[in-house]
Length: 217
Figure 1 (cartoon, rainbow, N blue to C red):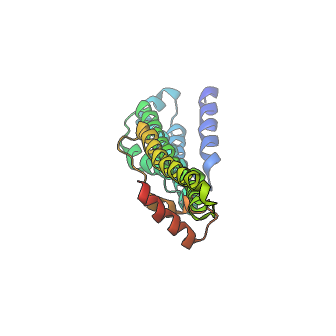
Figure 2 (figure 1 turned 135 degrees about the vertical axis):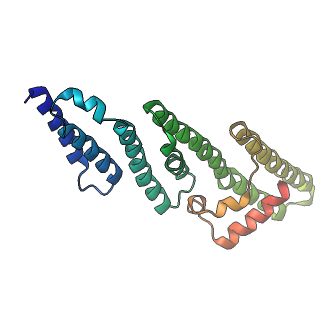
């Protein structure tokens, strides 16, 4: 038997065995197994050219499917719905690929689209990073005991903070709109786990602050 043929059979067998028994790569294992069986059935290396058919494309698709499935499961368990979009979209679209270029293109486009969603979602951080602290300062200014001669200063502070809140919300929406046109600050998103877990406020206090912010939208 041709030594080169033996080497190729050993190579494809090793590729198959790499995924054998690995629960994260069921599709890849079946794909590599099909490739190995095609190669192992050859008595001459040239025969593999005909027997391989579309197995290489199926192999590339299988790897994307397995990796996307693992990532989707991981992000779903963490309740990271935005980060789960990339692998979710890959699983939905990768099956339509007909060649290696399309596999790479589809996988990359899904990741790029999901990164935009993740980036825009990150603007919600401003709610507790800058808006709620400004509300707390506004509370202090509204309720502080000032000598009467400084009442004008208190009113100026209040107006300045109120204007800051309006401007900050508008600026957040404008910046996010550069990534996703038409985006508006949805305060209800704050309650989703990926954001709520970052806010060290009770539900009652957070609800109060969010209701106050609606007055500045």
